[in-house]
Image (cartoon, rainbow, N blue to C red):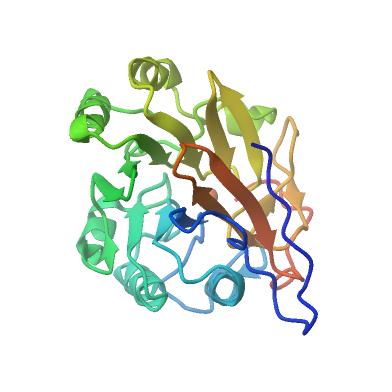
Length: 285
Ligand SMILES: [Fe+2]
């Protein structure tokens, strides 16, 4: 199913609701990714104040996507690995009124993340069952490296988690399991995607894979499985570039409607304006 456009504004001018018109037993999942928070709440990445940008995106989520069944935060949550950054992330996600599940990216300190996401409503855990669906969370980080790899432990845990008997499953991780057409990002994608796909090929319950890392929307399909990348809640990377490049597009989030028949309705929503003044000539970060 292609990205589903939002219905137009209602007659009274109220914000559109992303889940309008979907079956009542749709599992509603919001993905926020790559917020790159700092210990200093005014910290900025390439000119974008990351906490203010995350806060604005979460306000947009409140306006058009809540209530939801879960929020997933797919890595690069805190750029400097600080305890203060994780504490603020926990506080902000905890205010949304639904469980939030966080996994690490290459910029995170996985131990600090686990310490901050140790109890509801913000958790770092292996999986969760939501109706007919199961969400499975994988750690694709490799200490000291920007690129990702799934360890044998993670791959075995995915295989085992899929034994839980859910009809449909969504796999969540930080690194993309396929090239997206930008050489510099493709050089730090998931190195052993074949191993992930080998598990998925044995497990037809897997209906989708959702990831962060690329700071841009992306969609592909492999053997009927949706592969979905998403904009960052702060800086956006330009699509299809051999070298690092910035896209001035505003920050955003992805909504997913996990349908009872295994289909996935999904779309990306963005703020009306960029947060801060992004450094368009940046050569890296
Ligand atoms: Fe990132």
